[in-house]
Length: 420
Image (cartoon, rainbow, N blue to C red; front, side, top):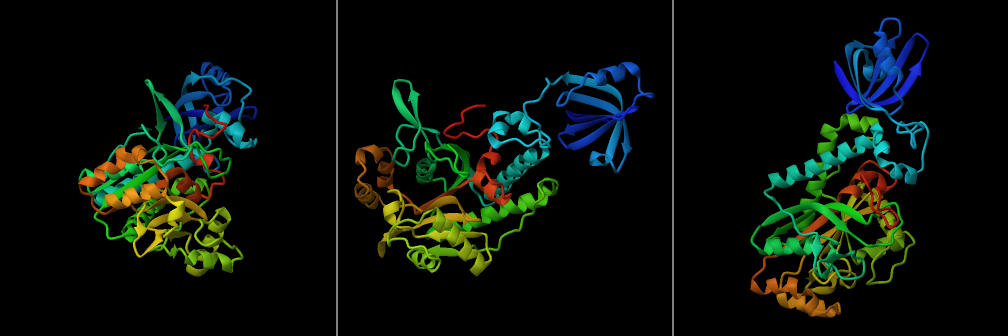
C-alpha cells in the first residue's frame, strides 16, 4: 500500500516510532519497529520533521486504535521535502492560533482536515446548484468582470487601469445577465467573482466573493424567481447531505433539509412585525442588521424555518433597474433571501419596459448618458425577466455554522488583506 501526505505528528516510544500522516483522505499511522526495520530506511525516517511531505509504501495492518483504523509498516520512503522547524502555525490545531495568523499562513492552515472539509463541502454546494440548473435547462454563461461603467452606481467599486482608460471591477454580473437574456437565451447562470470596495470589517463581508447568479425570462412575477431560488438551495443542501457524510462528521455538524416553499415576508407588513419585537423603522425606509435578526427569530418561531424571503422593498432604497409594483409604485418587486439571520442574495423582477427604465433612471438622479450603454437595448423588444445572485461563501458559512465568512474562502480579500 502506498500513501502520501504531510507528517502531522511524530512519537518516539523507545523501540517503536509512530508517524501520524495527514493524507488527502484522512490520517494514517506509520508504525516503525526499530529492531525489525531496515536501518538505512530508519535513518531516512529519523530526518523527518513535522509537516515534511512524504510518500510511504508498506504493509497495511488493521488497528482500531490507529488513526483511520489502519497502520502501515513501511518498506519504502520517498521524501518530497523536509519542513523547516519551528513551524509558524500548528495545522493540527492543538496549539490554537488567531484567525489573522491562520490566514497569514493559509496553506499550512488548510492542511487541517476541518478546513479541507469546508472546501470539499463548498465544492458539492456548487455541484448541487449546477446539476439543478442544468437539469432545468439553464445555460451557463460567463459575463465580463471588467466594466467601463460601475454596474450599480455609488462609490463601492474598485477602479482598474485599462490601457489609457479607467475601468471598474464588477460589483455584480446582473446587468450583463439581463443583456444576455435580451439576446434570446431564455435561462442562464453565471458562476464567478464580484468585488465591493467596502470598508466593512464584519464577520460576513468580503471585498471579493463568488456567486451563483441566475437570470430567467418570460416570468409572470417575482414569485417565479423565488421558486427557482428555493429549489436551487434545496438541491445544493441535498447534494451535500448525500455526498459529504465524512466531511460533516469531521465538522461535527449535520444538515437539515428545508421545507418548501420558504416563508415570504412583505413590506409594509415587515414594519408591523418588527414593531412587535420592539423595533421601530420609519415607513418607507429599509431595515437594518438588527431587524434582519429579529425577522429571522419571527420566522423561526412562526414557521420553524431557517430560510425566508423578504419581498417588495421600498423602491427608494433599490437600484433603478428593479420593477416597481404598478398599483403601489412606492414598493418594488425586489427580493432578499435570508438564511439563519443573514442575507444570502438579492434579486427579484427587473424592469423590462424602456420608458419605465428611463423614468426610474431620472427618479434616481442618474445621468442617462452613464447608463445608455445598458438601457438602449430595451428599446428593441424585451421579455419579462428576473433573477438573483446567491453568495457561495456566505451560504457555506451559514450552512456549516462558521463564525466568520473568511473561513469559507480559500484566500480572503478584505480591506486589510491582499496577501497571500
